[in-house]
Image 1 (cartoon, one colour):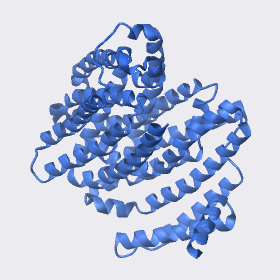
Image 2: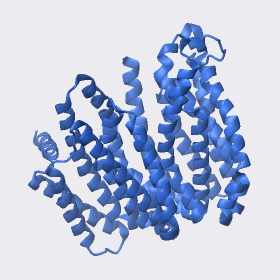
Image 3: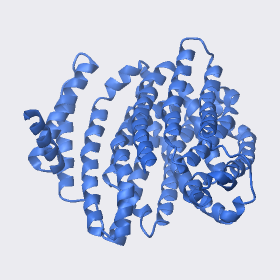
Image 4: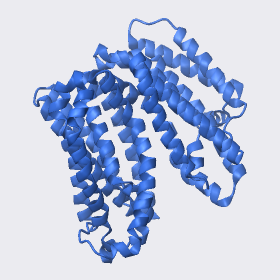
Length: 493
């Protein structure tokens, strides 16, 4: 367990550092160095590449985590598992990559207004897809070997720093834009190559294929599980890629770039939710195993209350100070995404407030139902985008995302309630929402100060004081009162 604990702690630290770097890069640095259309182009290329890699992988990343323990035998080269893990998806990528290449005229017709920008760089999507595929497979292999910290560092930190460095070189005139796009591809390719080097260094680069790999577990069983995993994973991929693709196709690459920045701003709201879910997943699985339904119900409501408290505060903090954030970019055209940011924040807040319903479903005896929910969510986002983007532009994409997230979480919450008698709300939730609305309204009512920074400080301090005081006086968040008491006792001590 020692290596698992060490890797887990390193992954947690790397994840938070990576989230901070990613938020600063994509929200503040890259928009200052690149025009909206250029950011939109990279978003479209990475979206095409991610979908292609996901399809070619055929769920083998999940298959590795599920079945590798059956193959584990270092002396025997893990029965030739690595050649199988890489071989079948790479063969599949040959076909998928060919489809992407042949689809070029069709894709350029969809993006006709930006074909002059997309056309010369379109084939980069194939290289990106290959790099993402290899990295994801090797990452799964390393996680199965309990060596996951290095791949997390590459993905969360190094790739982001390399991309920003390439953008800086472009902004300073050392690279043409085509050179930046190739450097963007190079960052992903280098991360995959470094994983291969790392595997060799730890003595786990077992290249030799063996027939024994087909006797440990039937190939049909591995493919069946991979297909099931693919259906689940592809819906999550669509959730984070389809907006960029559809906004770029129906509006322009510049609009896609503006939307990408708005989307990245809203991701700050998910940081506390992700931290909670890392703890919630194994805990809820243990509750199911032990049949502790009362404890699960208590955790469900408590985590929902905590998500509501933190989510409302962060959503209001970001929403009230969008003007300040956009002034840091120094490109007025990006401010066109302000309404989209607010709608995306609302969708993510609804997703957080409904608590851990998705984890309860996926760890329950009816876990297969979660696949239906995920597919429905992906289909809803595509349909709503198709209807709303032509009518409402960027706000239509954000509204579609918000409605889809809110609707599917409502249905999932009702399913958990009906199937298992668990629901996440108590009388404190309306009090938290009322306090948040009052504090947010008071902060918004403040007059604008001479500079956006002073306005930020005034609104932020007002929101913090009123929100904290309101929660304390209303008793809506007893956990915060206990935390404040502990901090006060430390100060006095």
